[in-house]
Length: 402
Image (cartoon, rainbow, N blue to C red; front, top):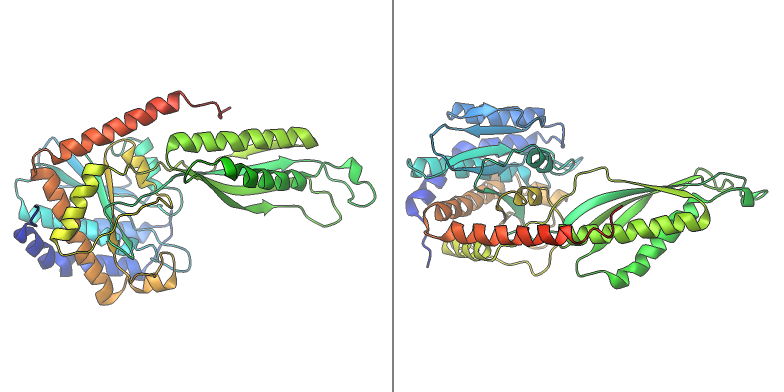
């Protein structure tokens, strides 16, 4: 049975007051994705004062960073920091506290274990709520140097891992021909009719969806006036599935359906993907067990998600290396993310208590990965086997792609 390292926990507590002002600053100065100029500067200045070297921007992504203390150790790990906020409701995503948890974790591990076997590096990943900054960093090799990556996300429960879906977007536009809707409708080609048929077609396809496949969205454009046959109509959709292979299968169904509708009523169709694809996080059995034990050893209740939901760019990191995305309780049950009520809990003593809870768990788990014989080897083996099976399945399942 795992027992938490008392010295490590004491050091987390001793450094809490030093780190919490960073979270307070982020909470009080929210910046949306792509605009995190002050947030990035504040965090990196804090790290420089604590002896870190800083590279910013990192891998070509504005307002990202990599921070490290050179140890000469060959093996390196990434503790990820998120710090973008939401429009109007600020850090209702919890990133201000999550970022503080990462900072506190790194400082406490460094203080506790002078000869820690990994070089601990902090990686700032902006734009999680918008462009998916981790997708960009991963694509540019930003995580290739690391053994694993880890962070916490604030929620209304403690959980070993976010259980999420692979996701991307489809901006579907039909182009027809305008005409007067009363005097000469037969001269037009109604793009809105095509969009409506596609919406109905997707609804009918749901009877064939595999578990956790999802399609949802809105009509982005549907015409200019009631008496004009719409020559353009657009649907802004998200597609989600249990993994990347099934996501491509789902997109193939929609592409074929859209092409058939367009051909049938005499319009054209174009489909654009405007944002990066978010991969799913692998729900790694030995990791889930170890994180659950770590929560429990620290006296924390912990749940396991039975079904996946939502998506995150952390899944793209997991495509390259094992990525751990713990859920840290920071609000009462029933309080949902992306609400004003959630944001209110990022302030004051409630936010500070969440900072402490998250850093204790994540620092303890990283210490286990470093020192517990065989644990990380088992996690990496399971991770690599999963990704290899997925790669092979993807190579054999491109029937839906053009």
